Length: 412
Image 1 (tube, rainbow, N blue to C red):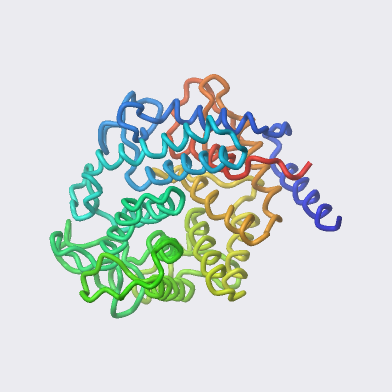
Image 2: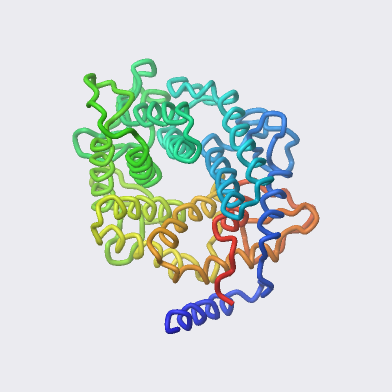
């Protein structure tokens, strides 16, 4: 009873902070309507990749209507979450539908992005930033966990290897800094013939903590009893090696990109300079996810404490309006969809239900302000979307992504 009262008080606090949101609560039917509206407006149904925004009729390529390469796997995550939800609700028709959609999204992206050849570094439909690949590693490994298709696991391990080790074909030496630890963001050479340098080049949170999540997802899913690879240029690792890598990068991240007193995750660090302490929701998210997964694997309480601290900072310090914040930069609208994936781990897998009132209020707010004709939401959840607005898929993804993972209003 005491816990329920606390949740109700938090829910009232969240509602009170944002006067621009209706108090009507979303329903199960709304969840499916929101996801269908998202797909209807943004999925190129001929190619099965997603469009940049509502102004484009097709997703041709990077500069002509195709959403960013690193955001496509987040949209595939949404399809898999729709499949999981339908399965949990014993909705066999939707279960079949979204399983088929998940495969079509994979095939569409494989066709568009050079057959998932992670050594093809053209800047239109290829791979040219480390974190772009690592987001795919995570989702491919998740797809293997869900569907059991070995092609997904093979690609996930190949992409992780590409990020960690680099590419002889491209000529870069990989994201991992053997000298000082951590993961570099951008490989060289493309525009700069010099190799990455620990004292000059950036190590961003958006590659370091996704690397932790990727390694832990592979740790969960690779076969036990593997022999260690004999060559340095490996395409797979053992469970123990993936766990070791996750722990190492996590510790580097905690020591260089995490404020242990507040829970704030820095954007980046260059050499020994002060970190760039600009906090972004997606960096908070992957830090939470990596922390939760390490807690589950090891049982060490400090990982869970870090996850809670980072989640508290996101809710209390980064969300003054009582809803998840919006950043208007290119592709930054995707941050909520990423946060949804990892806060769900903390809520469901670790029993941290104190975040539900905030999350449900964010959903109620964004859903109440949707364009009710096109059935799409914007990224500023406390502002109404008008019928003539061009809305990008990144911003529109947040509310349906949250709804798929939090389909029930638990605080009445």
